[in-house]
Image (cartoon, rainbow, N blue to C red; front, side, top):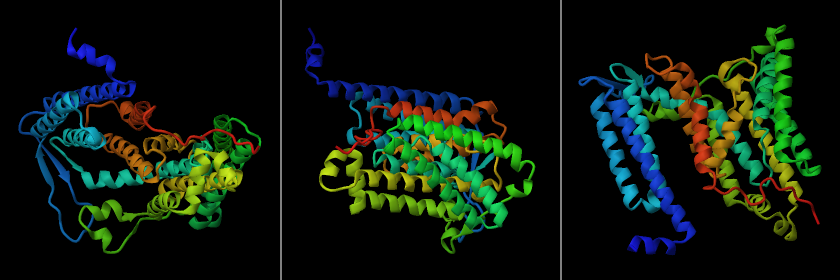
Length: 425
């Protein structure tokens, strides 16, 4: 009997699981390296160059374009990823596993963009700016879910809240010719739907997932009916004023970073502020400690005098307000009009971002950027002469969602009392 055979039984279940994940991740890295070399390298003729435009509008300093040899760049990035795969298979990266996964992902994305831009150009700054814009409703959905689930209530109804907020903001904004009243109405709509969810889940102990899906079905059906029967007959009620881009003086003129971060509509700046405020509130304030204690162990929180039901009600209502605000982005911050089912599953993607981010506001924000980038890429690539079916490109954001959720099941931990009704004994 070999030493490896005798050592294997002595490994604990956790160690065997860690070793298995280490090897699986190493194999994934090898597959990524092969795709980069064979898919993005050998498919490009030698001598072809990719041009990355790093300028978007006037800035303090004119930034020259980044010109790269397409095939050589793919081979170099593929070699780096293959080297990372070898290390991952032999000894792993330990505490740096997440960092290395991020770096491999960035290498794959950059190799893909280089392949897309082969013998043509792509505005990289424009793609990153679009990433943030497309991430806005997803991040709002993730923040809504975090507020609810940190207190122990699952909110599957985010999609319905986004959709209802978009509809009401379009109608109210059109009728009053005020984007601010439209946004306020959207927030109020989200609160009303959240109150319905809270009463069903907290007061009447209805299964929270079922209650959320009921609200989603109600929102989709009602907005679709009113859109067909009412808005189409009264188009003047579907032309809300939009909040245009508001560049931040001086900051928006910083090369590369300025257009990406500081040249957006008010919704983007509010999103940045909410991410910081909710993170600080949850982890550095007395209110946050109470919310997290209710989400982890409501019985213990009750015994020290915390009103568990009030905390859950208030957090669900706040989550509804955030989701309603995210819905207003679709009409007042983006398209300028309501369309049937225009949220297109962004509420569910927001829930995936919440899980991907570990129920943490900053994690949810970064995860939202991942999904926003996938959405931005499919939009940009679809207008270029790339040999990829358009149907596949439209699937990209949802494929990323499935991969992320499937890959993280069992690796992240939800609040212990998440989804569990509390009955005061």
